[in-house]
Image (tube, rainbow, N blue to C red; front, top):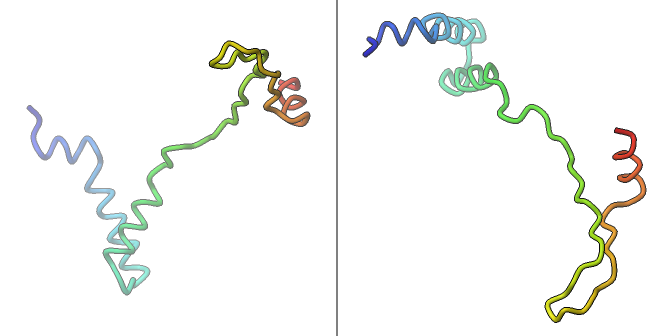
Length: 87
């Protein structure tokens, strides 16, 4: 089992706390807790870094509940198809 000091050292917490307190003091923040929270949040990478658009495939002949064939459905526009073909 690791000690508290090992945890602090592993995550470099002393340096992080010193950095946020120094930034807050230098800024002379009116709301120190809010300033420090925003400062630390700014150092945290975003959870989602890139979003890729995925297009649904073209649905061919769809069979309805009554077993009747329905018309084909084309879900993308020409621009979407062209973008997909470029890849």
